[in-house]
Length: 99
Image 1 (cartoon, one colour):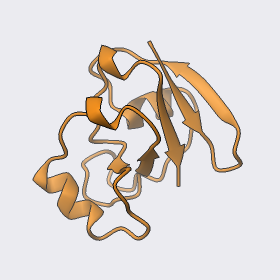
Image 2: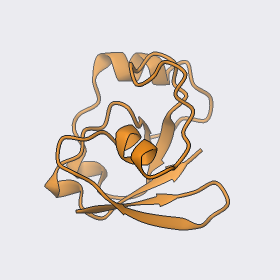
Image 3: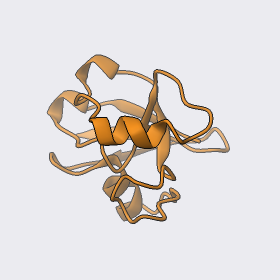
């Protein structure tokens, strides 16, 4: 299964993932740099990304993730925390834009 990262310079990088990994973990293991000052605990908001497709297949946003996103600038309906989105087979082909 693959997801596609749209990097800040506009280039795209397709990488494989295992079910149960987070977007943040997949990025880290593939050398894609995300700001995660809290090391994936979902409290800093540094791993804020935009989900470009398959929003209806994403796991529901938790209250904690929503609270953290409320403190991040530039959020919209496509905003998620990469440390909080757990990937599954329904998300094959997901496009994640880095902020």
